[in-house]
Image 1 (cartoon, rainbow, N blue to C red):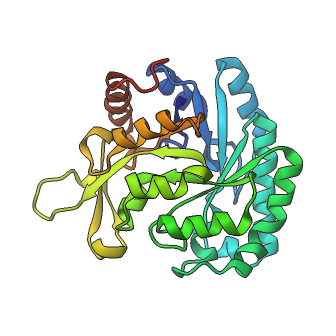
Image 2 (cartoon, rainbow, N blue to C red):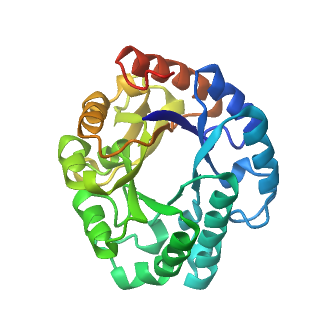
Length: 290
């Protein structure tokens, strides 16, 4: 497996080229692309200068493994399936252009209820899935704490509904924690045949008055911990058993792709997360090619 970083954490304050330079400082050459990393404006990628990213990729000898479309977090973007389908196809085209195999996407306003609405999901995802397969791209659906992907068994039901190797999940253990669900070992055991990508971060419960950093405070949790806030933390300092999870992933050998660091903090704190997390992972024997 390889270690990567997401362009999201610094994308609003720094160019993609500068983000790449920070990653390379910590031995990282694998990256996840977000619309905010690409010059241009508007939802998605179709009105953005993807050639500028191709140039950075080639000049800096890095790999872009995944392209993310976050548009499902906007009610406007999902007002009609037709509009959203165009955005998701645009992300697929962007992935093809930069040499990425994966497009990370979300459920959120498409299906915020706990029970998956498969007919609604199909209206938004069935056409893009066929398009992705034509382009040799895999769609990876990330779990979130407040939609129909909030628990591993719900995500598995979605995976089984599509039953397609080009429609897998982006497994985010900390997001399952935010939903009050056990990411490891239970969540991993439920979903391991369907994992197409991995996000790495960690979190714990926010405790009022405990002196936890305000810059790492997150949104309300769901499930058994609601309405408490989630408190994000560097990987070695959170509640989720990331070491156990990575050990199991390596042992099983079903997933051999990139695991992407995705710190949830303020931009001025992001590099300190990268430094601490990459060092801890190396010390534990993961991603030894760093």
